[in-house]
Length: 340
Ligand SMILES: NC(=O)c1ccc[n+]([C@@H]2O[C@H](COP(=O)([O-])OP(=O)(O)OC[C@H]3O[C@@H](n4cnc5c(N)ncnc54)[C@H](O)[C@@H]3O)[C@@H](O)[C@H]2O)c1
Image 1 (cartoon, helix red, strand yellow):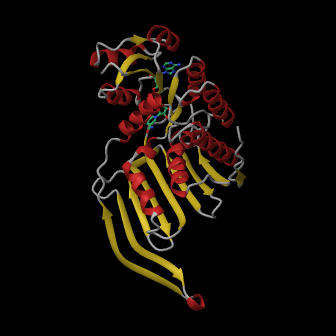
Image 2: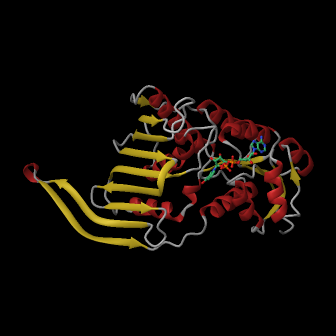
Image 3: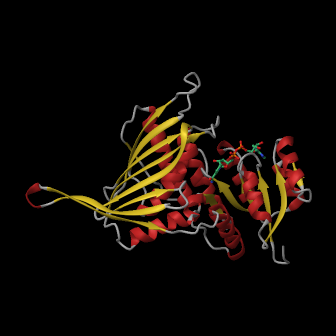
């Protein structure tokens, strides 16, 4: 900590919040002003590890007593919009975990409030701070794989099973934000199918497959599950010239460019090329650390974050259209973005 350190509060220390605290306590430029949670057990766990951090059992008390310049909101998705709104209206900069809100209306409302109050609003789309994903973007921007034709992405594991939102709203923000970033636009039409395997009585989809259609005609196939025996975080990007396999669980070969493609040649003949593969070595600083440093930098410089309210709201619009399609048996559904 130094004299110019930024005072930050953390809201919610269940599963993910402790990772935020671990990173913030290692940052010279941050003073962890306080931590709050409704659960005594959660606060006790923090106290055991960090006896000097002031603890509070309400957000109001933490704000009143610590007067933070910024807060990181790490509570369940259904509480994000209420807590973020309160912070922004108190003049506090906000980093809120994904999804920004559970409706597109709320996401736009928060974005508007942040603009009106000249506050930083950043959404925790962690993968956009990952060197793996940034490397993919550079490879695509250089034209190395030609034009993107199609992407398919799988995010599967056993857990974290949530009760407030379905698997689409829990895992979907990651892949939609990565695809929007790589393709450079937002889908215009989507479709989705959900499966309520665990609890058909109080339905929340545990497994979702979805389709995104981007304005350039690029299609994306998505598969999410929190009921899978394997941990899979894999994205395949098919280009006109080459193909990429991005495997987030494989640190020795996270990004592999395959010099393979199939094209329709003269007289409709299908020509296939199958040459070498190139493993791209990537050193990975923890993406969450990069994300938190970016937030602190934005608080200090008043810069607009990469994953700002507008980015988060667009993902909310896509999620909402996917949900609509899912409720209507996979009906193709337009994504209508609205200006603020
Ligand atoms: N970016 C990522 O990779 C990533 C990974 C995991 C979770 N997340 C996100 O982090 C958020 C939290 O997830 P989690 O797995 O830690 O959930 P969790 O349920 O384990 O923990 C949430 C905590 O928030 C507390 N809480 C709830 N309402 C509160 C309130 N009004 N004030 C203060 N505390 C409150 C709960 O008591 C609990 O301790 C979710 O939005 C999730 O999507 C992001």
